[in-house]
Image (cartoon, rainbow, N blue to C red; front, side, top):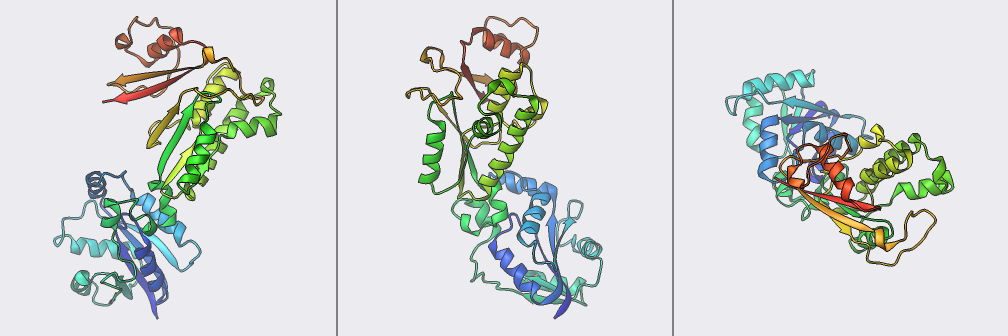
Length: 355
């Protein structure tokens, strides 16, 4: 039994093979330190090359910490390699920094590849090098494999990391156009989770469907509860997760009922969050449920606008006078004024972006 062991790697991303080796190593020492080696520039380039969002060391530390949180003698630390020269020139500085990060004598290094064996023996002569399953027979996977095919290697991704990689699909549209029905059906079809619209059951359970007693606090709570509920749905998602609303809708109804914007609600708006937006047109029968505002099909419109160049993330009607054509619009305030000027009642605006 070793006193202090170290298991290090980039963990980009961490997977079940890593977790197996962490657990196995933890049975052979009183304390195991998992050390995440990170070079921010290299990480950014690797993720860009493989077509995935950047996986920061903070995310990797969070995922590993979540996964092993109840194994109390395993700790997670980070070794910053950003200013370390390319190996093999950088090994001396790396070894000094490893000693600083660990902060105590290292009795054993646990590795899955003996290519590090000679180097570790040279710079840590007092430490044993313990080899684990170099052929990867138990978990035949690598982080490179996962980055190249996220969904194909889904079962190997740590549970704590899956919300990050799950595809996010928003089902949007006007009232009573089938958003919730389609969201539930797609979730069942793909054997995965979904998140329903919080505002509906909040209005029913907390306000008795009385729209006259809404306050700013209510809409702030709705946005926060929706955010937490969406995250919980992502935690159990099977490769994809479906949502039948987002904070843009909460913001719309907040302004409709309160007559002004709500900064707390707006903080939850993230137009880049979703991988796919499916917008439904109102081509099904109106179903009155006591909460919907307008059942007249003559005023149920959908406007789709493509914005080229500068991205317009939020719309706020200002005091400026808009031009006659959309291409003349220079500021986001002008754009909303123009859209609101010509939009019929109960119109939903769908904004697309092109570089």
